[in-house]
Amino acid sequence: MVVLVILIILLLLAAAALFFFAQMILNKVFGNRCEGNPNVKYFQGADFPGLLQTPISFPSNRGQKLRGFLYYTQQPDYKGLVIFVHGMGAGHTAYTTEINTLAQDGYIVLGYDNTGTMLSDGASLGGFPQAFWDLQGAVTFVKNSSQLHHHPLFLVGHSWGAYTVANFTHLKEKINGVVAMSPFDSIPDIMTNLVSSQIGKNMSILKPFFLLATLIEFKEMAFYRPSYSLQKAQCPVLLLHGDQDPMAPLSVSPVAFREALTDNPNVRIQICPGKAHNVYNTVEAEKYMAEVFAGYTQLEKNYNQQVPPEIRREYFEKADFRRMTEEDPAVMTQILDFLNQCPVEEK
Image: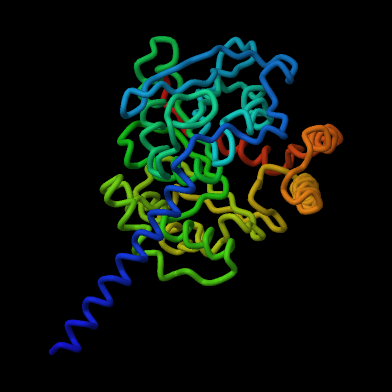
C-alpha cells in the first residue's frame, strides 16, 4: 500500500512538473509582444502603385484596440471584402504583397494586427485562441459599418491566421468563402512539433499538458480544430498546404484528415508540391528567404551572438526583399479564381 501511494505521489509530481514545463513554454512563446523583425522590410501600401489605404481600429475581447488598414484600389464596384488574418512573427504588413494582389483584383481588404502585435494594443500575444477573439472583433467591425456591411465577406489567413479562419464556423456569422494557407489543426500538436524540432527529441508527452494549460486560459476554445469545424462549413473553403512545410507539416495539418473533410463538398484541399510554409510564394522565394536568414545565423555565430549594428545593417541592406516575397502566380490565381467563384447573394 505504501509503495502504491509513493508511486501515485511520484506520478502526480511528474505530471505537475510537465504541466509547469508546458506552461513555461507557452509563456515564452506568447508572453511578450511581437514587433516584427527589425531587420526585415515590411512593405506598405505606398509601395504598390494604385493601392490605397485607410486606417481603421476596433476593440477586441478585453477592449484592447486593434489597428490596421482597409486596402483597396479605385473601382466602380467591389467584389467583396476580405478580412486577412496574419501568422506569427509580424503583423499584417508581412503580407502586403498578397493584400495588394487581392485589392488589385477588386476586393477591399481589411488587414489588421492581432493583440500584442505591432500596431495593436496588448502587452502580449496571449495564445493561439486570442486570434479568434480578434477575428470576431474584425467581423463585428465590418458588420457594424454602414459602408462595409453590405459587401460579401471572405476570410483569408496564413499559418496561425489560417488556423483561425478555418475555425470560422464558431463565429456563427454569414461568411461567403474562406482561404486557409498552411493551417495547423490543433494547438497541442503544433506546440509539440515546435518544441520537438527545437530540441531534436520527440516531446509528444507534453500534448495533454499544452491542452490543459490552454483550456485553463481559453476554456472551450482550446478544443477548436479545423478538421472538426470545417465538417460543418456551409460556404466554400480552400485549404492550401505545402508538402515540404517544416513549420506546420502535413501531419499536423487539417489536410491529414482529408477523408473527414472531403465528406463536405464545400471543402477543397490543394497540396502544393515542393512548397514550404509560405505557399503563396514561389519555391525560389522561399529558398532565398531561408538562405538569407541562414546566412545571418552564421554571422551571429561568427560574432558570438553579438553582431555589430553596422555589420547587421550592411548584411540586410544587401537582401532583396522583393525577391523574398515573390508571389507564385499559379497559387495566387487559384485563390482569386476560388474567391471569384464563391456564390454571393444579391444585395
